[in-house]
Image 1 (cartoon, rainbow, N blue to C red):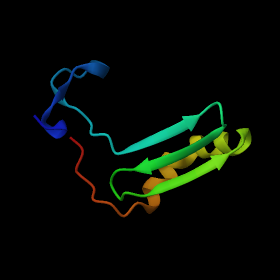
Image 2: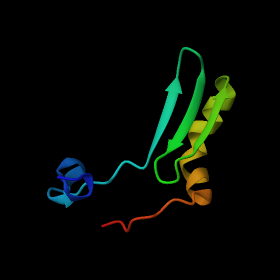
Image 3: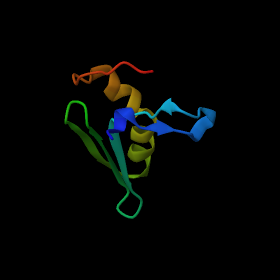
Image 4: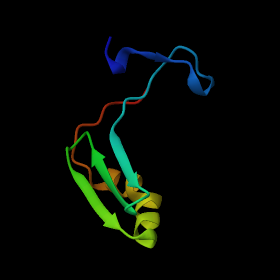
Length: 77
């Protein structure tokens, strides 16, 4: 079974295809740093350091990276 063919029951949508993981946002609360790893285009954004920088980075990295991501896109169900 592949991730694209598995089914999910979370979110009130029983039997609907599960969404694939497309990236990882890593936040280190001890060292106060964050980075984003895109699994589509295989790039890493960050790391950024400091409370203010991490807060700003986390707030918009997903949408900001998606706008410039060159990786393949799969249609959503």
